[in-house]
Amino acid sequence: MVTEGTEKPTIIFTYGTLKRGFSNHVLLQDMIAAGDASFLGVYQTVDRLPLVCGPYRVPFLLNFPGSGEHVRGELYAVSGRGLIRMDELEGITRAHYERLPIKIRPEIDEESESGRQWRWKRIMHTETMRRRCGRETERRVSDVIQRKRRKGM
Image 1 (tube, rainbow, N blue to C red):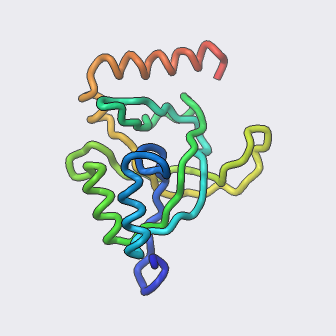
Image 2: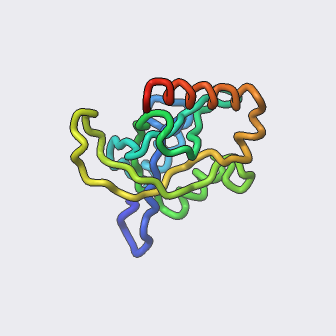
């Protein structure tokens, strides 16, 4: 299990294909079986962030706090060995995604703003990848942000 030994696990917030029921969750299932990951619960972002669909229908977050919605995801404790496997899948060394700190909280209903805020890590798409997605993605992101602004968010 991740908690054995002296290695401190990395806490990862997943919001896309690594979540239960999605195509890449098999990686986390393998990591859990091998003792390299453990599920911690369902969480959501404290800040609203744009969650957009990129090439090949792959979701990614843009680092525009205040735009978009609170993003629901799953929290995992991951060993160093597991983190290497996740980074390989997510293309961290190829600048497809990067791990950045983010504020999250246990999932609560929107009416209640109570709940302890946590600072963990998540995988988030880089600006470089956003540029690679082309004008179509730029247009989608711009449309999402403009719609939110028109609604007064």
